[in-house]
Length: 265
Image (tube, rainbow, N blue to C red; front, side, top):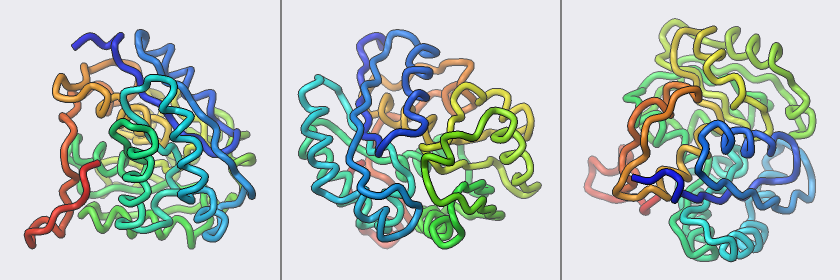
């Protein structure tokens, strides 16, 4: 695989930690990670506002803009604005992005599931910046995929703008404080939170994999863009990027055991 051939595009709501994307682009080298900012009528980690942020009209406009950039994959880079729709709603959301962008698509919520599976994780701790009622929907989303959350912490921050102001020391302390001895990894689900410059530090602090929203979003986009060639392991961006990525395919869920299939993601 020639990594310099890969281009994945991201639909990002508003402005908060979008500079994580050029940072990870520089760290990887030879990849293109364009970001299209989507409409955020209200900056609030509140269910009604999140349903609006992830609405089909908003994402359709952004995806059509991405279509003109020549990307090979598209990711709705918003965890809360995807899992808040539930598993089936998030799958429909991704299907709409794929249709409008004309390329394979996914979202940050599905990226967390695929990343956890790639690392063989089944029990995790979640360090969420959200209010509790929103964070609990992420727990339910993971549970649908058979991933057990052994500990959930909620910082209760309402706006993405405030989350984006948290610096290195605060992020390291927040993640470390909310690890759990039974967790195989810590998941940090907010693309408004800066993390990609400190991924190795985060893992060194807790002594286990740490999956963060912007990290898994980029990994998912490049995984889809790479196709059957697979994604080459890279150092400096946590355990997730250091492990070979599986080729894209249907997302297996507990429903599969009963013979049904989820949409291709």
